[in-house]
Amino acid sequence: MIALVDVVRDRPDSAVSKADFLTFFSQQQFQSLYSTAEFLTAMTFEFEHIRPLSLGGETVFENLCFACPSCNRYKGDRQSAIDLQSGETVALFHPQEQVWQEHFAWSENGTEMKGLTAFGRATIAALQMNRKALVRARAMWVKLGEHPPELD
Ligand SMILES: [Zn+2]
Image (cartoon, rainbow, N blue to C red; front, top):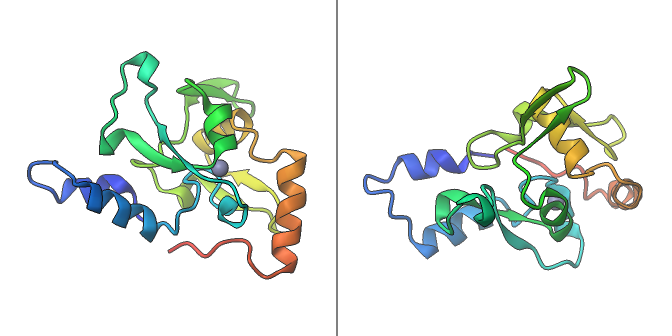
């Protein structure tokens, strides 16, 4: 998975068209850029403001990401959360500027997300990415051979 910032960097005027936007998200297989796996649900995904509107974030390409409704709701207008391992408050994972695999991994059985960094751990906790219903759903997806998703 490439970071969206790499796509934007190649644009001299940073004017990214709607077509580029859709291309990028279809390359991501329309996964939630936080929890990745929820493309298997029947939910309609949403464009989430990484920096919330309420805190001055804008509706521009660089500030949007594709997210499942639950990641979007739990994130709300948060921008940081506590990493329980270090006790420090850190920024949430930034799906456009950071690369998923550097901050998250799957448990051996594929049902739980593990945080590899403080960003990853704090984001998993804040967005409740290992809540029971989701872990149960992932266990079914594993049985179907549909999970974990292949990221490149
Ligand atoms: Zn999600």
